[in-house]
Image 1 (cartoon, rainbow, N blue to C red):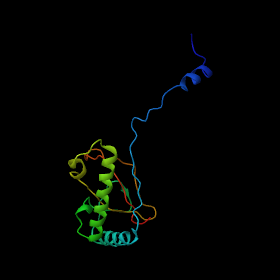
Image 2 (cartoon, helix red, strand yellow):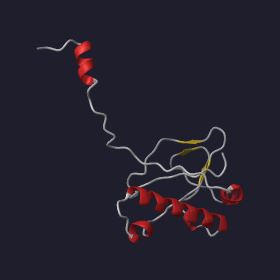
Image 3 (cartoon, one colour):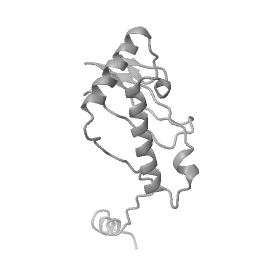
Image 4 (cartoon, helix red, strand yellow):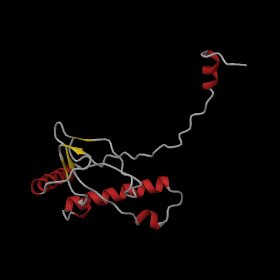
Length: 142
């Protein structure tokens, strides 16, 4: 027996199960007492921007450092990386059943800085092809 276009089909459709098959976990955290660290990071990033031309990937306008922030020797950058690794380990603990020491410690972190002033932005993009499991961002100054 054919279904009526509106009523019968809508009633049947209302019984469908919604599955969150491709949900991506996200971690949101505001580091306490970060004002001094952010001020130092801002100085270091802006100084680097003055002496290096930057690169163009997804940025439209603005400045994008090379993908080497994780190698910068500055104390504030190293402190930021310590914090980033702590949050990565927390994400692993929450998403990997029975994580091993290798899960918690043997990962590669690659970082860079973006400076986007009025009118600059980063276009929508993905990190496919970089063996990326997670991506994150940290705002030094909005």
